[in-house]
Length: 396
Image 1 (cartoon, helix red, strand yellow):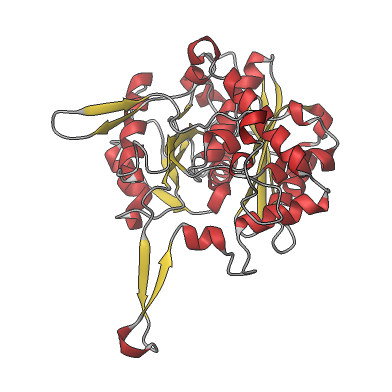
Image 2 (cartoon, rainbow, N blue to C red):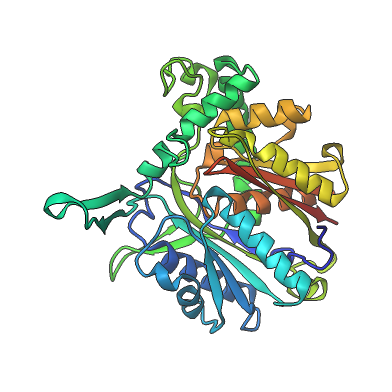
């Protein structure tokens, strides 16, 4: 399906800085902090409220009271409108944007808001009754680590899937190291001229420490420099593997928001009514067992086919790449240069709060396309369960 009616206003989006795991945002309920940030952002735009008529609330790490997720967040944003909460692992942003585009396309909603907020820090440890267990034992789960370390469908952890996919294209340790250095250097481009690129979309987060002290986080926290000499001594995380801590992402905390609406309303909400950002298509896929980083390729191909274009027609490519294997596989399968992807940053470098991660890639892709005079933007990434999702946008 090709969308014809779903648009994103220019400037109708923001992303918070991403904070390192157990860093400045580690003690904040992600829904509360995300709603407070979204409210401040909406107020800064000077829009008449209510701005949106529905919310797609993306979250992957449960928080206290997330049973009420979307409606609670809306109330805190002073928008007494309905919504739904979506958990779709690392493709949560993609899924929310797709759902919002479908709603606009069918006329179900006029201006849905994709509200993405997650906190990887201090993830919950859950227990369930075990009536058949002896002595009152319980069934327990560490929400983050247990699921990162083992897909219940395969028994393999996410790092295993990266090493499996690396073998499919005969990727080497040297290639993963070179890619990690390249991606870090691309991220540094976003920091030039006093972070001029990031300031096009990044909105600061305010954290109340106590009654007298509030801190403001206005830049990414926890990004580790990556140099060839600096990573040469690192050992592979998995014995016999090719990925080190430098060639994979790190958990983070953060939030983001994207408005999806009609062409006319997008122009009214846009900070430049002569720019149009159209959502064109969506793709999805599930790869073979324990091959998660390979899934973005068929998902991207589906999105391209539905848009009626090829990879050669795309001006900007952004990928969610929790492992170097993601991009090595993607580039080899599509026959493209690794240097043409992920300008200004990617999740392998700036971190992975999960729900808002791809939203940031979408936003950065839009801004890069504007700098480069417009064109098609492809955003693709993998997600738990050996799945992938992709979007094609067109910026004019």
